[in-house]
Length: 530
Image 1: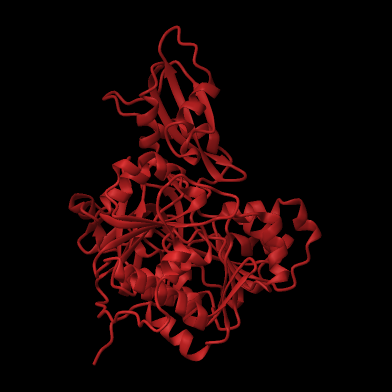
Image 2 (image 1 turned 120 degrees about the horizontal axis):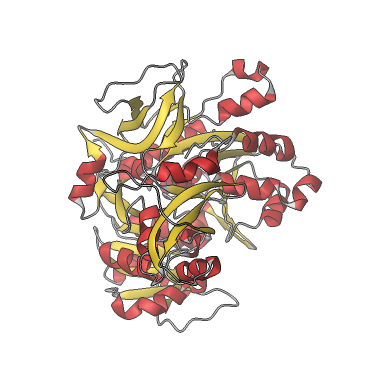
């Protein structure tokens, strides 16, 4: 009898073969795989007794702690789907996502209950479970997480649920380039095969110690929440990105693997402690989110001794569809040239399916490193679609191919390299920012007559949003006024960092805004790759 492909089976395997091995380290807390399994089973039983059934959706808003890991396994083993929430979002965005996702319950970290308190009366949740955090208090009413799972008698067995590999495992929301977040439906099969890619291409084995620098809410930690367990390796949790603390952890915990956006790399190499820290473990680090600059990769390898691995994907593809495979022949190239190669998005992974660069007519571009086209993909890791949004699904998946919206070239060796964005998406520190969403807010300001938001290069974040604004006559609004207005109405990371006031915006004869003309002055002499 064929068994369904589900990453949940890897927890069973890990408990079977590595019961006394350290599974999770979270500060002073250490859990073996046996203990981790018991805690996730308790969560599953408690949720079951609270009325959660197969097919239900449970939202979770927790940073990278053991509670977040437990939620992935405890919720999903019931056949329910987890909805990971970005705790950096505004109350308005969270209200939309929680209600749109049809979440039945919410598990939330006490530090991030503020936005939920604001919108509680507007949410259709049946129950809220709160993870207590020392030093934080909330007025939000809910059940304490530890009391919730410990109320389960020790001899109670978790319910046995038949899993179909094509059923929903997680519902991950991405802003993309629209003002409303879209719910990406990822199945057990897609998560399983993406995690297999993670494990194989990042070389994960039982001796690895993996540091969760990448938010687990980002496409399920890119698959790391599953792949590390699959190998019987050790998860090291990290509540927030703190460069000095991370540099200490490299040696203290013998970290051998981590993932993160180029922003995280930048933070690490520019921390004063970096030059004083000798890292003997030579960790492997996968990076994606925004195409990393070759110079950044070189600094990461020279300063910290990190072995950089460039991967590429999207939430809609679980997320991996390309990785920059390293060949022995590259070892003889100068360091600068090696870094340029590592900055390419690369080739297909073993288990994801087919990815290529095509013209508008669907024909593949020449492998000459010059002919530009769009990256498209099909196969094992592509989403089922956007939740309750067949129109957006049809726009994204055409003739069986998912269209990424990324413009790229293919080099003679088959390596794909992104050259520009087909859409005006801004990727700042690995976070997607919709320019149209920010523009829509700017138009609500009483002094703003016209506005455009573009990406400009930034040393720390890769790129940041800049607002170019035409004010009404006699308006006295300042740059700081605009920035504070935005920060008060949307997530802080989406707010423009720079504001320029102009007399008019460049437009075509038909009135279409020409954003490329606004970007030109900022990207002259710089290679715009996202």
